[in-house]
Length: 203
Image (cartoon, rainbow, N blue to C red; front, side):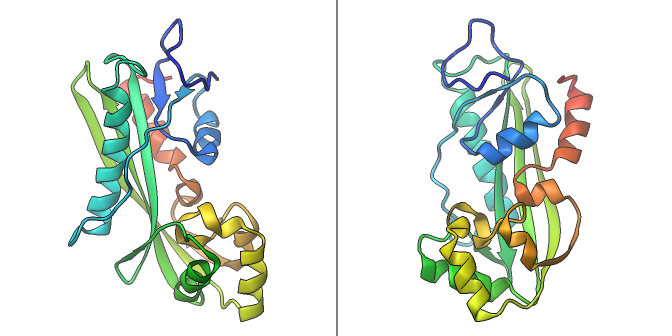
């Protein structure tokens, strides 16, 4: 797997438009060859924008930001981008910027169910293909005691995770059950991506 940021001598079949090491690791479980190029866009929900619409828009903008840059891609390459959000009571929980915000998020999520939504965009400009899908997973958290929240926040794990927890890390201790794709909660729905790659002949 080539994870350089410049253009390779022989273009890869697929580019992952993401700076997330978690997404790169997940994609590496189902695809042997790809390269990684960060698809930086402003991740800001617009007024009145539904969570599902928001996550699909961000995924598309990430893919387009890479695909349309001749210094980073050419039109014949596939570009995959994803964005993951946590939704509770129709409110999008992003990445907490400080300990207070992380604790507030955990207080909203514990002892109840929430939804993790990953928007994916599979783009090939040469073929005129822009496949957008939102994959949803339901997650139930157990009750978390205040001292447990404080101890978890002190680990630093919540600060670069949507919703303030990592199901693949220490946050797994808080999860009672899930309904749907586990990898989707981590950052990419690998089961669905396998199906899409097969249908488009990406290997």
